[in-house]
Image (cartoon, rainbow, N blue to C red; front, side, top):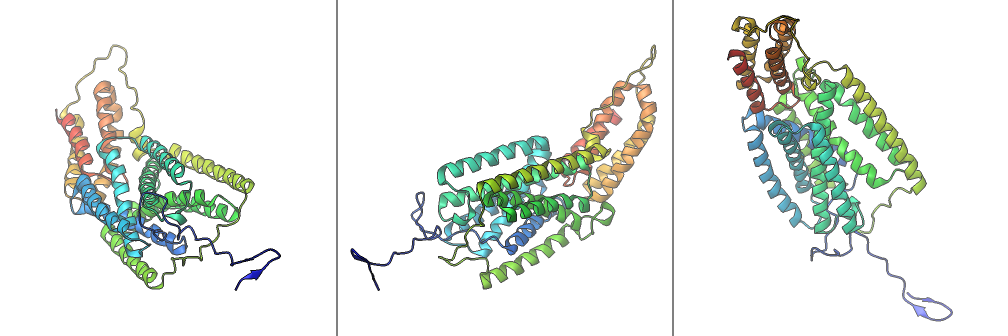
Length: 430
């Protein structure tokens, strides 16, 4: 029915199409619905589950099945390429396909960071900085091209490409920063879960108080990676290592079943799909409120940095030991250096040989325990060895530290462990 006005009769105004209904601007000829689920509690639960299973499954295939870091990375990169091909061919959000891609991105992002650290020797601090800059660059290009970073408008091929690239970088960044913090602090698995949980809670409160929703989403998204990985370590590690002892395979199986159950529920109920035309309005906020909440988030980040710094200063073993400079040794005036004999180094040689055998047998927990014995034996022998030959002692001290670091890593790489322990044994027996 039309309405009469003083001048003319005109038809009712037609509603404007939603962002999800709008045709793509460029880059694709297909009009697609939003390819990302609605951000609900289910979204965050399954995201953490995917991160955890990605971490534990990759470690299981890498170490237990003997694929190695490089082989595991190749395998999952191929699987990710296939899954992404299927994802891009869909025209709307399909829970099974979408969450499979998230699991595979979680694994590959983690593996790429591990390769940089364990095989190429890139420090985690450098990896964290590089991935941070890369993420900023991706966001900058995405926004410059699309004028939005919202995940509620992933309805074109370019936007979906930017989205998955961003997700991959966030996983790599979360891996690097999470592992860096663990190496610095020496926290046990149970302790390491607390920091990301606290920061995510702060972000959730900030979102309710008026934080920029896009910023809050991506900050929380990054933090779920170390949370999920630390949770996987807590469940999978033995009780002697501070975990619950479920093992890598047990943890992977439990979380895979949980993911499958939730995805099945979402597929049947579609509770994470907003019907076209019923999109939710973003939480109302103002620029002033966003700035105030942003200031609060910065304060929370500073407090977290202080907590990590204090824990790192109190960490006297593990990575802190390995990353500290070797002590400076010198002879007494008029004293001549004497070569260290096989008898002098016999206890160190025996323990190092045991570590190599345990690593080769895949007994990582026992290898880590023997690493503690190595550290104790080396510290006990240090005064006499240092007094006898400071230069030789200093060289061996650095090699011992390298063995301790490689064996005690939260995600040890067999190749790196064997390289460091073989180098030490070669020096000890030469």
